[in-house]
Amino acid sequence: MTPDELSKILLLDEYQVLNIPQEDFAGLEPHIGTRAYTYRAAIGELRIKVATQIHGTISGWAAGLIREGEAAGAFDSRDLFLISKGRLQGFMGEYEGIIKVPDCAIVPRRRLWPTLVFEFGYAEPYEDLKADVKLLLEGSAGKISKAIIIKLDPLHDGETEIQRGFVEIWHLVDGQATKHGCKKSLFPPPRSHEVQKLELPLGDILRSQLDDLANEGWGRDDTIALYFDPLREYIEEATWRHLVQKGVLECDDESD
Image (tube, rainbow, N blue to C red; front, side, top):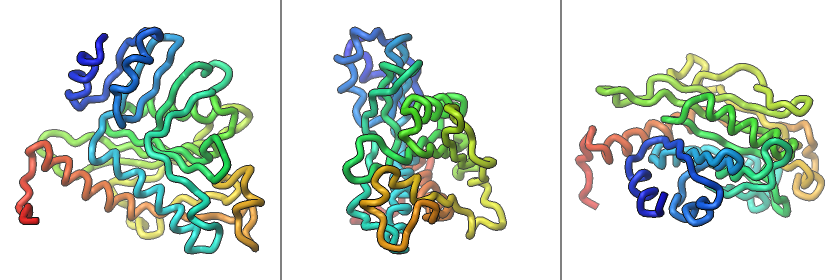
């Protein structure tokens, strides 16, 4: 496959599973752009996510965790970095040689591996998202504390609002990626949507940097909340923009 051929495929704006030999990947990788992807060199498989407005919402939601932690007095927001589409390598065991670009990750200051990773799925099958979570948690040998899946059902013809979606949180238990608790409904919003949240221990957020970055009075088991309602708002707004770009909806305010 040539760079031009790959560029044309990416213009289709669809979730792609491509066969790319290892010797060709280095020349093609720069042409993937800002999309999240997974490349498994051992089998020459490249999975590339769609780059939609909806996918971009995850960074805004993850940033809310950093803001919440600073507002609560747990840490200084300047000590945590939000990395969107950052390239990860150095996975171990059966995952050796794989290159992974997650949708979003949080990395404490002076730490190589992220502690929290967010994987967003729209067109992407749930099974592929779970495979990514296994790679991130097991392949990093637990250096990544938590992987958070946000999965939406794609819009069907005639739909202008997301109908179904959920959030899951995964962690490592005895060397195996394991779902923590049950999936939480994102769409349709439950009656208790205002209090829906993930509670993430500070020890999982800061890991080896806990002693250096946590403010006085904050310990490993103290938690920071990540509420669901802001994510819903981001997704609803991004869905509207996505449909405007697709020509499904009209935008009547382009005066500025």
